[in-house]
Amino acid sequence: MICVSIAERDFNRCRETLLSCTLAELRIDKTDFNTDEIQKLFALPVDVIATCRPGTKSESQRESLLSAALSAGAAYVDIEVDAQKELFMKISDLAEVRKARLILSYHNNEHTPQITELKDICNRCFGMGADIAKIVCRAHSPSDCARLLSLYQQEKNLIAFSLGKKGAFTRIASLFLGAPFTYAASEPGKETADGQLDRDRLQKILDSIP
Image (tube, rainbow, N blue to C red; front, side, top):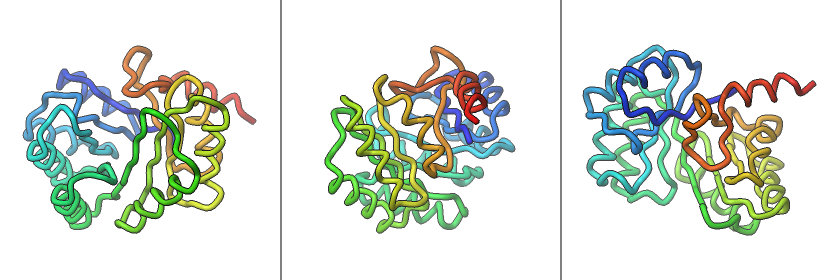
């Protein structure tokens, strides 16, 4: 399944894009929506992942916006595995109450760690109660990609792929190795991550595979 990652700043355009999806991720950190607008978007009849990465908003803002998304009906919430404990506890507890699935994610924009560290990160995610562990790392070589994808040999409920052009193929390979979904942009030029394909191109590739 393809999850469309959305970072539209215009409310109506964001709403239209969400309604065109079966599964979507709303990158709240890349928008300026208030809690009322977030609630309206997450109340739409679409399965949506609530994601608000650190860096553009304070911890209290992140908590408020993610809580609003969960209260309105977010199907998933994505929190960093190294998020502050207070934020993690409040959001994971609310996710359980609202019956939303918890994605604990690890991102490394510099390199791909060694396999022992990658396995430790997976174990940490599931040990903290993740329904899905998401591991995303920068690839500098084919061996980086292979190392990350090897996690599928022993992990379930995992989304693991590589960042960058050298790792773009892993976004497709992950689906065939067991990932429940992979991420795509709504259209060319609206990518939310390095190496991300747009959904039409990704779907054409998937359709061409026997």
